Length: 290
Image (spheres, helix red, strand yellow):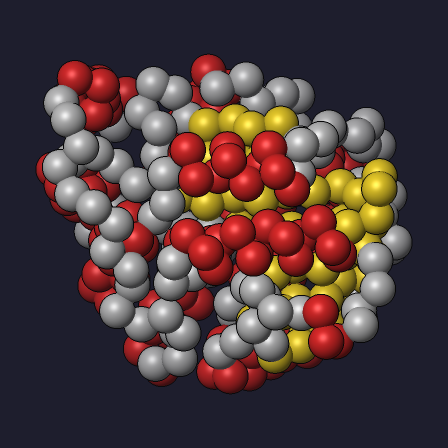
């Protein structure tokens, strides 16, 4: 579909005032079986979320490349984390989440894929001090911060990231940004209604209503992660990425990302290229799929 489809929501988001305040998610811990299954289906290689997972996996790889020990905060069913682990077999990953069903699914998927470089822990990602995990040379979290109940929890989340990070750690935090208009939320949900399970689309809508603002992320970035750079999709600010500088990756790995993109079904390849295009407008470089 043409990028012209984005023109009406872009104009509305740029020209009209904010229409609603943040609405925290009704399920702060995603532990319903239907939710877990919907996220698994969406993240499958043929699922509507796979393009987003591949996009993040490539950019995270450029951010943490060469890291020995990486922690992924609020990993959920670990679809994103396991894809990242496959591209980075020499890195040891720890996924942390509070949901028992999500972690059970993650453990089964990890075992089924034969991955030996991933372990999991059940804990609140805003309160990890008591675990004495030590420092990591990579800290990641994707599409998870909006599940936090309050801005105060978001600040504690950022404080934990700083506490866990070595001085030269690769840091990659990505999440939704709350739209100004309800019509934008409906537009985005409807755009994927034909390829996503209904339960997932309902959660997606709740996630957008619960997302924090760019000003929230920038405030805590300045206080806790000043060495990172902030990127957002432009001109429609729907996603943000806060990350350390990219590192050079070996040519065979870059080719693996290019080949993975080429093998995607046309619909998912277009979704991936839309992400590349709008984040490039927001200054996200280099492009691992170029």
